[in-house]
Image (cartoon, rainbow, N blue to C red; front, side, top):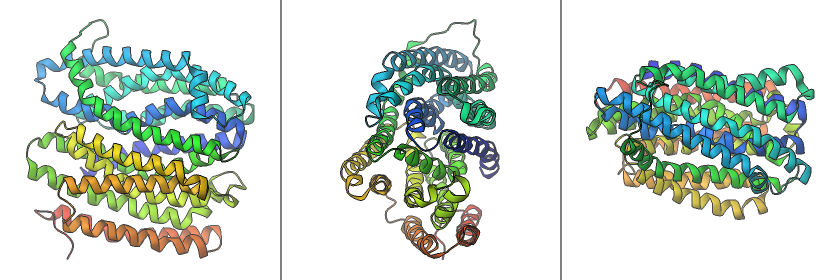
Length: 478
């Protein structure tokens, strides 16, 4: 588990780093204003689909089904799913393209009419990426079943590479249409990279195979996952809508904060894929799956708590160092710090959901995630109007906490010694980082102090992980 997670982290970090570079170059070229807001609105739906698939939506449903099949049935199953996701991808692309103007007005109602028109033209081109994203996600699921994680992990890097190269070359001379086509080129590279995985799975482009039962079974599993993912992305949409009314450039600020917060989560995404595959292999062995879950939760804490604490303590300096000048004086550092708190509890929720996915139960996580999303949506409707842009992160934190509580109660983990200590440690670490945010002057001094603080927590939690991993059973530290 550790070695696979490490290598998958290495290939994924390149993709997320390139994605952040893409956002930085975009703001540097066009500024944090109406033009950038407009393109981010156009990019929202394709990017939401890509990030949802990258988080394991399709693989969470497909992997258990694929592993249950006899070897001789797998090639027909893969061919059926290739045909089905291709047709659905084309349908989604057509719906996005035909109603591009309507989608833009829905996502960015506060944009100026000229910005909405440009965004609609961009969305028309960006809609072409959807079929390729879906095929890539299916190939990634097949690759996970074959214990081939690295090729699929390169998807984000390949997707972001053409836009980054275009922005590096043209800078402020770049335009929305050429940038949109660069994303299409990135999607083509993604798909080409995983075609060998589909080939090894038995797919042949000249051999048509359609098993209605196989397709229906996959989409029956996908239904609850889509509801959960739809609610999650709907909340991001609400964030964009709220931000569009908070002034010019607010959408860009929220997007940048999200991108910065996602950078430390690279290893977590890799860990979730590996733990899901491991728990799916364990099947009905409840004790072994529970042990894998508890170790996964501890590893997740060891990754997210130091990262979040370090990000909170150094948020003003990170913004000054990594983003175009002047942004550190605005609300972005505080927004980034609050979003960093969200990643700790949201990360646990993702792993707790996969505990159910591993045995094919996609309904239970959907119910709990929808409840958390409802709280988040209610808070989004009330809090940002009073508190400003930081209220967007507070609303997300409220939803995450409720979802985590529901999962832990359902799995009878509220009384578990491990789960009693982890939230306390998380709150101590995050609260201890705020004095660094508020009091430490100077970019490099603040970054150094925050890094040292995060490193101390990494050593503490990392040593705990090693003790647990070497023990025959999972116990709390004495």
